[in-house]
Image 1: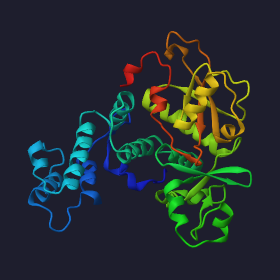
Image 2 (image 1 turned 90 degrees about the vertical axis):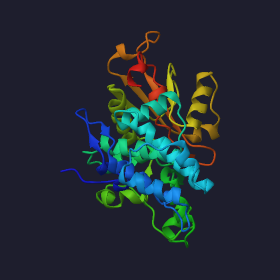
Image 3 (image 1 turned 30 degrees about the vertical axis):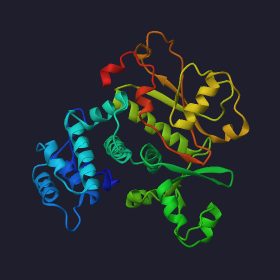
Length: 335
């Protein structure tokens, strides 16, 4: 029996179609309108109060530009306009997966918070039966920015928001060892505490060892396979590599902005200096099971996936690059 996790993403409010993709429900939409950012303050105008009341009753109801313009508070007006644009985008598509693919392929602009929540709930659906805490923690990289911490020769990935919160609390010996000025504990996921992941999954307070050859990078590779299979109906194998030497970058995908920059340098035949090499967190070799899925102009050679951290030792994963960056024959088919 599968165990629940990431309860805050609202997956329990959604339905699924016959292919296992997510269908928008009224309850899921109502969760957006009930967000604290949209809670009218004391003294809010009648137009704002009426709009919120109406949407909580009938979340798909049409809202005119005149109704939005009648809200007196400028910030509230902007917030409602944004959330209604987001609602309308979700409703224009048959599934949440299609709504995400449209954003990725067409570069549509929405608040990062909304897109990250969408990625999370799609992953929650993909990983519904997953019993491996390492895979679930690795999947957090898709929708939560990370801070990389050097610990005893290893790279530990910590949730950036949690890291910042820990840094504002009194110091403790463990966090002093991690280089954090915090009194709250930050455990690194291991076999001993993995069973507790499900109970604390919404706290995002477990570190993940992303050192070469360790379990964290292998777990992330599993998530990459599942994400591509679910969104693109494409079977691939993904294998983590420990060395960048002698890798022929016939095709590569940067999984974040820094990785794309490093990949561009390697593509151009440049050598990476030591600081650049230290920013390289992970390198994967990906093979597509059916070479006929590849663009006609390409030979069936491996595709390399690159993961890197910034100079500030942060990592902001871009899962959309796995949609737009692959050399597929018919990318239009997934849009």
